[in-house]
Amino acid sequence: MNPEFLTVLVFLAIGAGFVFVALLAGHFLRPSVPNEEKGTTYECGERPFVSAWFNFNPRFYIVAIIFLIFDVALAILFTPLSVVSRHIGGTEQWAAVGAILFFLAPLSLGLAYVWGKGDLEWLKK
Image (tube, rainbow, N blue to C red; front, side, top):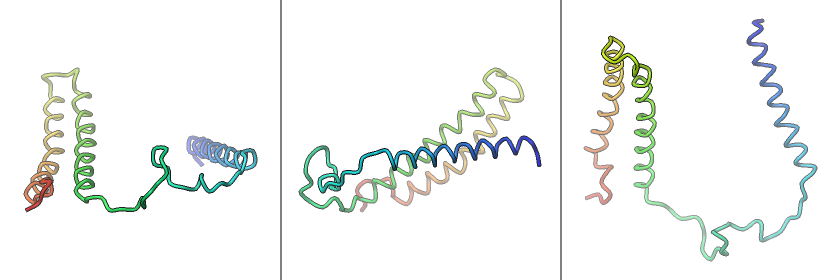
């Protein structure tokens, strides 16, 4: 077996053992005082007066998912720029521009699709 792989396995075993021992020690050391008040839903320190289960508008989720996709894409987009920032004017710069355009093409198509479908409109017609 590869010694580097064995080192990784040993670290994983030690980490899993630490988590297991910490959870086991916490189970035996923490106090257990069940109470009806502890089992209620917490709403900013106020007692709940209606059910906490109600439906949100699905547009919240759609806008949040679109934001996350483009936010992660923007973070990934800075990687080629940061790699070639020292080599301005070289062939690496054009390779980075090509990678950025290659990366932005499907995102632009996805944005055009979502926009054309009308999912970005808050009030649908």
